[in-house]
Length: 244
Image (cartoon, rainbow, N blue to C red; front, side, top):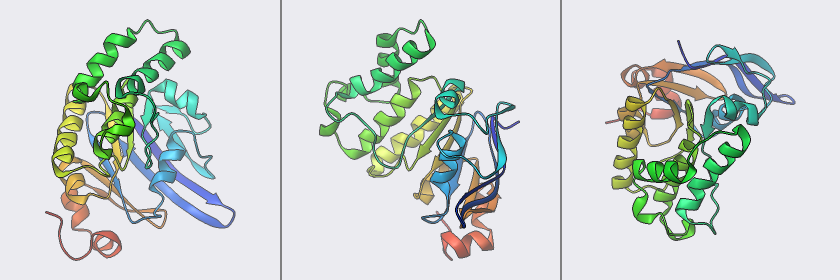
């Protein structure tokens, strides 16, 4: 059973339909890809899933619960966390403080007995950020700042992690390390990861299932091999050359 499932999700702004009858599933223990041309509706779908965007039609279920009308705070408390296309970090704070603040918020909002300092140390080590923990976020490369966003999201102990272009700005080495991080996360935890990403070799090599959006509708869903072989996907997004 998918942890997250959208059923016929439609989003329209006036007469402009941004998403049309979108149905996808995101399963725990797997990395799911969401790809498509710019403007295909990928970020709008993330916004809809997390309660940031009111949908015009359809339903959204998380762990069997209808969350269609829940606000972002309630979605987060159920176990959703996300990153954004643009870096959303506190540039005047250190890497450690950017990660720790999420733990402080969780403890305050849920009255959890989480040891924030210890959990921050664990997440920094898990994500390979210990060596830059004391540096201001503004001083580190963009590729590593992307990982800080993921680390901060992990501090909320999510069950579903939604990543919007997380490899943007990463070097080849940083990208390889990031792929290994995500593989480790889903293999060690009952975690579902869905990522929007334009780095097709990364997506094809990492994701078990891929959903392809074009002009607000799903044009293909399947394994990387199945998606790459789809004539509609080739025409709309990939092009005539197969992705290595």
